[in-house]
Amino acid sequence: MAALGWLTPRRRPATARSVLAGEAAAEAARKSALPGELPDDQPAAGQGGSAPAEAEEPAFPVVGDDRAAAFFDLDNTVMQGAAIFHFGRGLYKRKFFQRRELTRFAWQQAWFRLAGVEDPEHMQDARESALSIVKGHRVSELMSIGEEIYDEYMADRIWPGTRALAQAHLDAGQRVWLVTAAPVETATIIARRLGLTGALGTVAESVDGVYTGRLVGEPLHGPAKAEAVRALSAAEDLDLDRCAAYSDSHNDIPMLSLVGHPYAINPDAKLRKHARALDWRLRDYRTGRKAAKVGIPAAAGVGALAGGTAAAVALHRRRR
Figure (cartoon, rainbow, N blue to C red):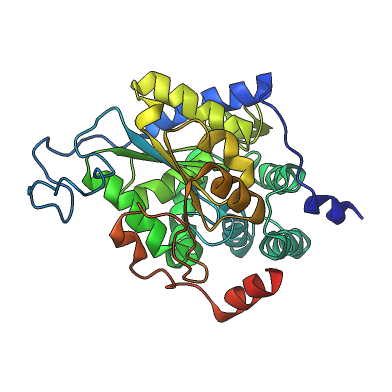
């Protein structure tokens, strides 16, 4: 019966633990950010330096706006499925835990795809399982293994359309951050592989480079994501009204509401309804449906269906 509770996600306000988790994620993200910026005179891809016609909509992202940045949710926004489950598969392959725990991971992943929702209790249960598995291991060991797991289970699951959106911001000289409930180490690996600036993720406590099995604050989920973006923006002197955020989940409405340019990507039913009510831009790469509002960079439409499986499409259509 506990599984039935996953069908009704609970909305929670920001708490002291949310703020702690957000601030810890922002600090970790700044420490792991990639150095370097694009030259000021580098034009965005496809612009060629020519002035746009007066009738055209203002270019977005804005080239050279160093107070603007983009924040991307990871699971089902940038990557198909949940990073924590793919990571669990890789750890099982390396005999970090037994078949019983793998079955649990597999069931959680199957339910995540079937229900199409991120219930905080469900996701926290998965992360508690992961914490118990990594307890006593060195951070450096898990980072090294994470690189291998990315190649094995994650690289082929990146949505090309969302990747193109992130690249548009990079081409404009803006910073791009992942914001995810996945462990910050895993998120940082993914961000680096995609050439992004860095990642905000759940911070697991470590002492002398060894995981203790505890979190700093709570999982970076819902309100905690918004707190992380707010903390990072303050530290990096970003103007949130000029920033963009992208997510598939209604749980991320607090984060999306912080910025001047919110986007619903592969949205669940609640986020789709909310986005339409507020006239947010939408894009769905699962079935090739076009955005409900123009304004997404044209490059995002390239390869929208790549990487999707026939089973996933059929399952999505049955749910709708």
